[in-house]
Image 1: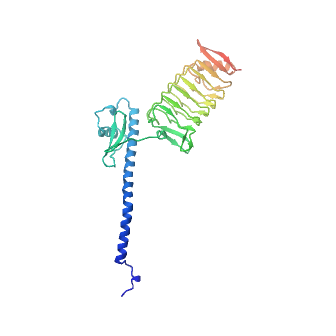
Image 2 (image 1 turned 90 degrees about the vertical axis):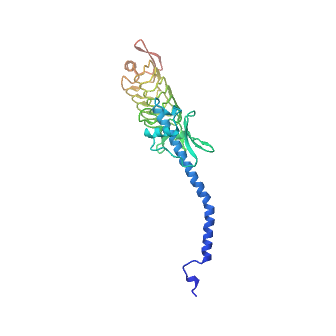
Image 3 (image 1 turned 30 degrees about the horizontal axis):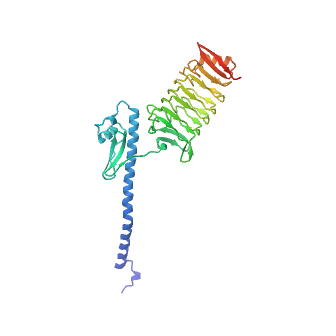
Length: 321
């Protein structure tokens, strides 16, 4: 008889024990595996739901005259196929969860994930409306879902936002935002507003906090601004910053040393309060009457004061010397 200790095989009892242990493990693991798979399916469906709402908002913001999402005779499949045909998505999303479908709600104007038991809506935090470069602490874009009256975040995940990036809220073709802003609140953590940051929106007024030191070229070009409150921290207004608006009077903080070419071009400014020795780089620096103002200001020794334009002539109504 061979010694069993020298055998490389298993006895029948050992095999039975191993099979029993594996069965117990499967009993313990299988429910968790099933739950994990179901959760993965739900997560995938919610991602698709979020995508549908985002790209639908994008399409509607840029194509207000052709809006099938207002036609209540359109089916959900027709609307999703429309997004495919327009190149916004590659295929119609198919829910992974059992007995579910995507449904467009014409009243609330958004997509929902409908199941037999409940209707699921995507919930967004304000941070999800923006794109960020957290390494450089600035906002790089806004997708429009937060509406046209915008409050900018001052921090994200503990990172303080200090800059509004180039073209971040620039409205228009191939732009970084899909909503034409009518108002904006800029937090006092912002130090730089980069070029074209709010180009071609519909802002009527803007308050620049004292924390801002630099305004980029064309930052607020082509809005509907009538009121601009400039913070005390600004040292330079670059070319075209407030061009093509509706500003009629402006207070230039004493800390501003230079106003660039066309900074207020195409504004009929008739009242200017300005500090001493401010450099106006061109005749277009301060609006439609900026050429005559530049001459008058320089001939006045670049004196600080409030200047009024009436009957084709500038006068000093209040000198701060």
